[in-house]
Image (tube, rainbow, N blue to C red; front, side, top):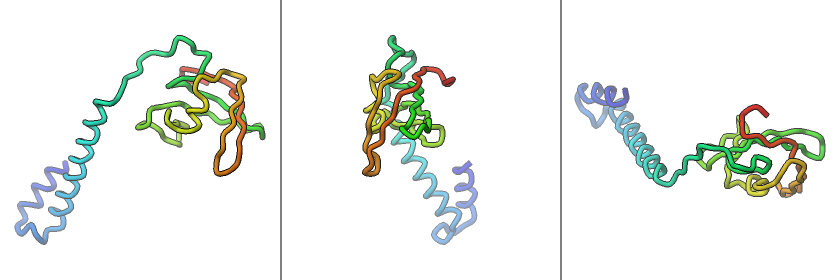
Length: 132
């Protein structure tokens, strides 16, 4: 679609003052740059296609429910560094919280320094399916 719009804009004549052509070429360079980046990342990725043998501990891919001292419950999933997204509660395996949670079990407590304030969390549930 982008290549077609660049081709159409190029047919309009003088390319030096053609905004559609200039923007289209810029967009093609951005797409090409992103493809190169993702191609390089593919070589570094590891596919995790099974759950860990000990599902009582927190490892990559775990869904975790934590409870703050205030009683508020939060749910997170440990994902790869390219997958994190705060909206569904995905946190990167490289984040300080994930590092603190790794190999912990239900009932364990974790203390984290967040924004200069120490937060205490109790691990309520650990699951390796989306239904927690």
